[in-house]
Image (tube, rainbow, N blue to C red):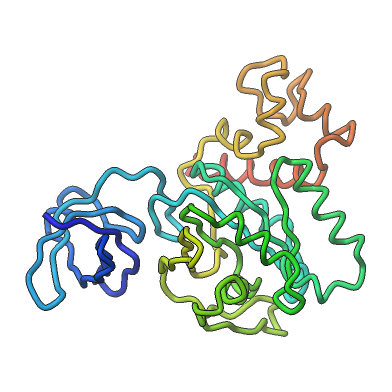
Length: 292
């Protein structure tokens, strides 16, 4: 039975690429509804040919990872993209995206875009310091000057990566700079609401000429913490995870417990106070969702 990878999904059709490079337009067998399984872009599948480049997916192989928003499977790495200007950097939104990537078990690289629009270099240094201290590699980029583009290419080699971030932060422009052959549509930022207009409508896996694959996805904007336990949240902050074993109480939520190593690190300036405040706000959301 032929096998392949789902590289695009549109209106109930799944485009499966075979190892030989052929792309087959498939439907999913009804058995998946009974099993409550929906095939996702990134899935490795088996399918039956029906002729004329068409087929039916008969089996979805076990997934290594899975994201809900965007819906994609078997991603290894997230390139989390945040603009420094147009729209202005929003650290709470950025931290929200990072939590979801951590929960999914993805390696993370933080990519700061539009550095050519920043006149105060101290701002780039400040943002870089926050996230490098938290344990993330940070790459500052500009599609105008070419800064950082080669560095991002190196991170992409040999992996299936998803580009994650709000609409308008420059994901498609960055992908076009990495490989001009993609020719992805790009959009502008609304002056009224300060957010980007969606230019990517579907999840699609793109092959890179130097090896590796990237998934272009719609922007992240409505991420919630549905289904997350309060005890899980702190593990999604690498700098908290590193110190949690030093807390007096096992399962410490780092809120008001005595002898909390995380709060102590915040007071000493070893953990960013802004990240800690975002954690507390996220914790309230998690607890509120668990109550209802």
